[in-house]
Length: 345
Ligand SMILES: C[S@@+](CC[C@H](N)C(=O)[O-])C[C@H]1O[C@@H](n2cnc3c(N)ncnc32)[C@H](O)[C@@H]1O
Image (tube, rainbow, N blue to C red):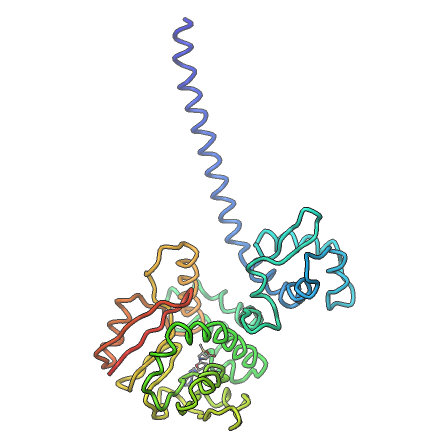
């Protein structure tokens, strides 16, 4: 009898343990779905931190700051310290700020990307891309499965470049966000491949060059290169396109013609049979890091929602480059997300 009980108990314990684990897994799955469902809280909390300059206030304070001090420094007529405390808990959970033993809050590695006044910040990207007009189209994502018009067009009734052409403030913030991205990329690009990338080039045109951030910098570093910014009329007209910037500004539609130059710089698309082409874009499927993979997949869905473009694997890039009439190409991954893809005639 005793022997039988001893034999049964471990088996029962194991079965109970398994059932408990199973239940925990179910609960974790529910929590995961809930977190995905509320994912917009991450974007909005991030934007809220930038809009209120939280990182800038802590940086100016030069050491971790008490919530009461932070509340006083906020650019708001009144502050609910209770709301601030709850938001701070969320920011700390996201890794945006620290929670020190004495209850104060300091900067993390992520915080510097929220600073509004630094060159190497992502504040402009956040302010330009987390907006009502950019978030609305996601409500039409389900219908994207039908193909046809982009979610953006379904939501706003027109394509994205048309929309921004008619909304100057959206256009300004969008161009500023692209420029913010460029300011992050450019120093790395110059350091990693500036010497060979621009070697032997006497003229360079940035197709879809936005407000010219890349070209103005490249013109300063390589005064021997004649630099041209080419973009849609509303972008060029609303930019400080003076001669003093050291670059030439040309408005037009890249699907009609592109100003002649030895080399073309692009952030997307590829013109047929030109000189050297330098593309800064994502190459999918070249890494193992789950966070990076997720970021690239998200960018691909962004492309689906806003534009008709897509992110490509190395094989797909190869096919595209060959189909456009180039004989040689090389890809160099140098940014967290993007690679430099150079195609030669
Ligand atoms: C992703 S943004 C890149 C901006 C810029 N390269 C930068 O890094 O700041 C794409 C740019 O392409 C421009 N664009 C879109 N369609 C175009 C067209 N058909 N012809 C010329 N430019 C175009 C947009 O106005 C926008 O500035």
